[in-house]
Length: 298
Image 1 (cartoon, rainbow, N blue to C red):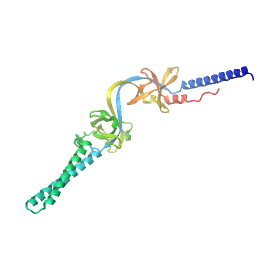
Image 2 (image 1 turned 180 degrees about the vertical axis):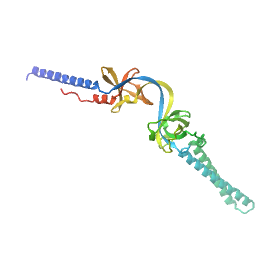
Image 3 (image 1 turned 120 degrees about the horizontal axis):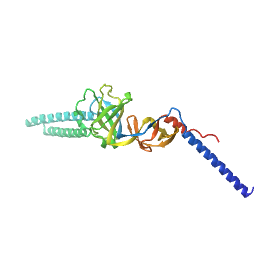
Image 4 (image 1 turned 180 degrees about the horizontal axis):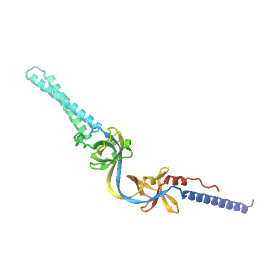
């Protein structure tokens, strides 16, 4: 075969391959933009949102977390021990004045009393560190419940009394109970790296029971305007969230987006979508499936 013939064959092969690649890409684009029955759309708008802190939470039987109750118990035991030690000192001092009790026994009793006093001081510091004012919290109203939210240590600074939010128990996943921070975290558990925050939750129907678990969402930071889409508009291409934007003539283009704060039945789109766009809110999963159709055979 001559050199010219070899070059000609190579050119033909490259041209055929380019034609096949173009055909495959055309098929892919056709599949991505294919009309899918049952797709409903809505115009994207803006809403006022705030950042949200989410935390695992438990309905509490008592106003104080277990750590606070343990600290209260330890303080009571230390104070009882100190009272007994002081009574022993007074008794031996009376006996010593009558030359009945030996001085050595009196000195030992005084040492025990000093040790008991130190234990009381340590117990008080522990109680203060874990939020010793919890037991002094105002009484609950007839339609309220206490909930303890375990906040990540990175979010502790944002949780202050008065912050509002919602508690969604697993037992009533379709219902959000209004919540408000009653006491900010007083300490961080070094093992779990979380801090307990006490929430006052409105429960007028008395549905919540001690021990019920769920998720607390607390609104923090300044309010801002944000692009919000219905949750049903967002689907996931592997781990990447995407939405489908209507381009006209029942054609839809895939947009990769970055999500922000969940907002009721909607979710913030931090980037990748502008207000005014029309997105698929029903049938987005079918559109995503269409993008994965194999190319038509050559």
